[in-house]
Image (cartoon, rainbow, N blue to C red; front, side):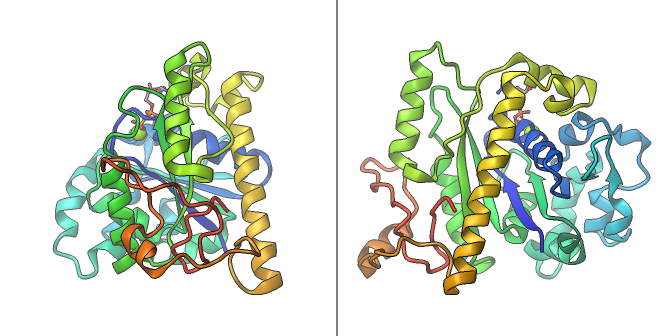
Length: 312
Ligand SMILES: Nc1ncnc2c1ncn2[C@@H]1O[C@H](COP(=O)(O)OP(=O)(O)O)[C@@H](O)[C@H]1O
Ligand SMILES: [Mg+2]
């Protein structure tokens, strides 16, 4: 059964598309069959992986509206083990059309019912908003990967995203986990980058990936050649960073699988003590970067109650 990872942050330009493309390609490079799903009407992911939207017969739009069988929307890419469910600009109208539909937040879940079984991983590139397309992605996903640009105001607006995740857990998808917070466009020469990294780790604790994606011009050049960075320049820093990220995710998921196989529960430290009810109510384990007094980050000893935010 494939693991569905939604790459989400309602801010534009934080590295969602770059991360979705290059994570998916890196997973495929290690021979995990992967579906890259572009649900952003801008279709940057689609063109960035080398598929011209104008050459397509169908897109995710047709699958969401039930006009085309989801499997028939999927196309292969130049990368072995990597398929694409492409987007199209006509997806702009989908959010409005979806409002009328019963269970409008679950449309993508239904589209993925059969497809998710055909892949080891499904990576969703979300649009820069918290609208219905992102809600559908979070409802269909097992986990969410949050790219955070190592820049001023990195944490701004994250409270809104975390709130949305809470709401989705409460009403739509109780098992939604945070796969991790990914620092992107990190510039080792800048003190600012290091300050932001420290700040992000202070809020999110061990939910932050060990892997940091550095600022690397190869990453920004690759999409114009329709290639993930591992095909464009395999020895670049960007390629190495995303391969490390894929490895980190695979290892965390394997650890989680073997833990749940041996004790029937998701990963949790053996000495984990359930937090007092009041603490759980107050935060759901989700830090609140927008509030004045942020809750301290919860370590992986968070109780395995489906609300665990441990990076596992
Ligand atoms: N690590 C990086 N180094 C250099 N440029 C990057 C990096 N990550 C993203 N970019 C560039 O920054 C811009 C925004 O990234 P993108 O992935 O499109 O963000 P989003 O999908 O969140 O809007 C793009 O031009 C992209 O090529
Ligand atoms: Mg994007």
